[in-house]
Image (spheres, rainbow, N blue to C red):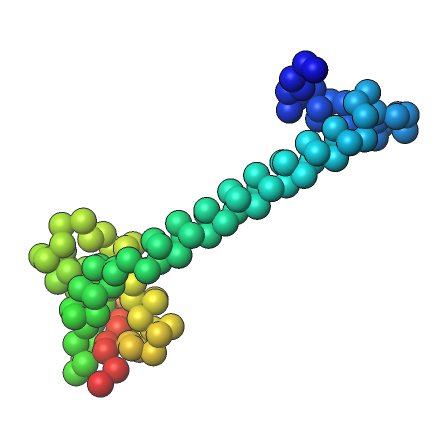
Length: 135
């Protein structure tokens, strides 16, 4: 028997569904093909889930560094916290630090508020987010 490619099988199934006529291949061949493809998709999903769990289980070094940089006494702006973390970790960016700060707030380890920063040289004051560790 000649090997049937995936493309040929999908075209045959599509044509059978469009026209309502019988498929070019017998029912057992189509069912076996579909079962094989479903099993392959299930295996792929299981592997992806394992990889995601392994990645999540890895210790997030930057998370710990941001947590250590937080001050329990006073609120610090994101820029101040990012500067402290950047001294320890050169890969730290403001967006990465902001993400970790949000995770710390969600975990109940830190709290967030708005702080008004006075403008310099006649510029308007602005509100920025500030964080501190919950003691």
